[in-house]
Length: 75
Image 1: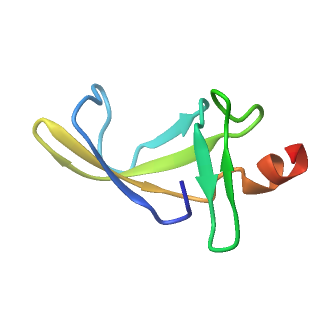
Image 2: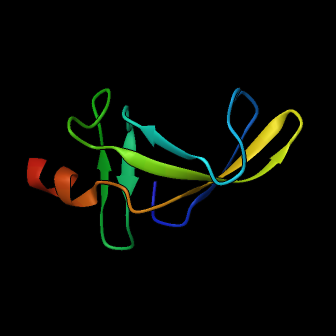
């Protein structure tokens, strides 16, 4: 994930527009200068997402700043 990535999901129940979601099992983080891949996930990294729109049955998420600094510390 990179800041401001847009993800479309089909299976998010119980969320509304402007809800914040904390995603704790991050498999990959990236920026223009580096990419960190977990095995199977990156310990200590988390991503905060905001639901921008909701279409039945899909939700659109905009990711905010992922824990790139935490992932960098693990390298």
